[in-house]
Picture 1 (spheres, rainbow, N blue to C red):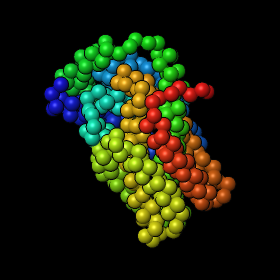
Picture 2 (picture 1 turned 90 degrees about the vertical axis):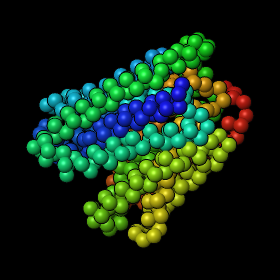
Picture 3 (picture 1 turned 180 degrees about the vertical axis):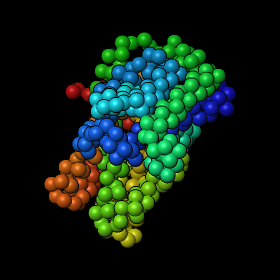
Picture 4 (picture 1 turned 90 degrees about the horizontal axis):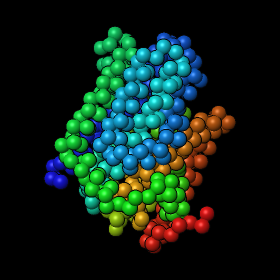
Length: 407
């Protein structure tokens, strides 16, 4: 296909992932008005906020299989429309149960986007361009989250007469628009014909057999375990970072500003680091990112000063590309071709979201038990150390032909 066509496809993926980020973070700045309107407690709201991650764990693998069956053009459109339906469902929910169901629906649409994006990129980009493409679309959820968190109270609520439902309707409209644009862009870029060509050349095998073979491969097992650790580290620290900084004596507003520093660094890093992660130096970069995560968890235990600032910088570097480079590693492991990329990515995100749930929950439990974040940050240091060891082991495995595990 023409070079310009694949970059248009990437633009469509970016729009879908931005809608993903907008919707995923849409409730956080609206907790108080939603609780007041629906008459629910903080505990109930906590259940709502975690609903989509729980659904995601169980939906990611079947969504990955559906992706390989339907192809990226149709599956990603369905995923985008499910995200739109989730946002619109929140807007019309008039009780706790309906809100819970609407948020849970996001956990079905989300995996189609997060598994579909690397599959499409693996089909049309190679070498350093593949890493760059993954880095570009991964800025989408970060930018979407920043827009949602910063504009909700300052611009959107006043514009909608303080109606949180109006904000949700807006995000639903954005997701719908992104989905329709994706369908148009993918059609004009010839994505479907490319997928049919790959499908005709691929060996036809039952989906269960493909999944069984992947999960028995030792390198895939290591990547899946590492995905749990990466999401545990990222989600745990991302959710609790303002409170970590506040526990060191920073006022809440100042803590919020400092907590945004890793996000800004992460957006810049997403554009640079994955592009450098070509096969000949991918594991070196992955090792460096794991060490950055380890340094971040250690340095953030210091109160203020240059060491804490360096810890925030290290966290930004780690969060910018750790997940992206690990996904890139997975889809380019020996034995995983383009026809299996959707299934493999679905397995990745299904496992990873276990860490996405355990990270924030674990840090909260440890804080309640000890009344500070020292134990939680120490636990994250252990996770980062295990990720470092896993990278060294994975480097050895990836340099040998794939062998199914005996377990």
